[in-house]
Length: 191
Image (cartoon, rainbow, N blue to C red):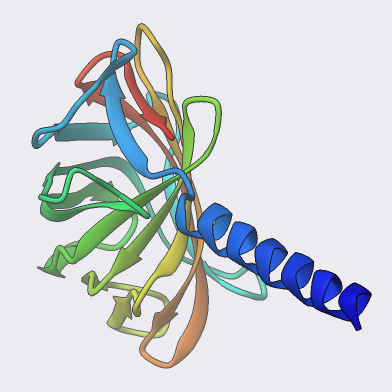
């Protein structure tokens, strides 16, 4: 009986340790030049020079291609947590095969640390109307639509690589683009 009590005590101790470990998971925080930012960070990014933003259906048929695009927003409180979140204030697409492309809603970006100074980027509530060979499409991100990755840097310009599946007027579509974070320099994600 004594061994059974000791075994029970060991099991309870192990569960308590697992609960403490699970509860102490690292938080995501933005950094600039390796310095933790416990305040709002304004982020501006533009399409990488010489590349394009491509929207196509999942069979590979091009819906629209743009050679100019920009996105901007600021992180909001809390500045550290499971994710860092901020509203998108600017979302533009110009010099497109089919214009105009209009932002109906900027939505919210969420950044979650993955490794090093890198993170995963998701979007909620963004909505854009664009032309296509089939007429006008309305493309949306749902709650936590995976967009791609943020590759952080200690100096220079971070990169956002987008490879997302969106719903565009009921059609499953892929959106691919590479954005260079023009401000702030040295943007990274830490845990």
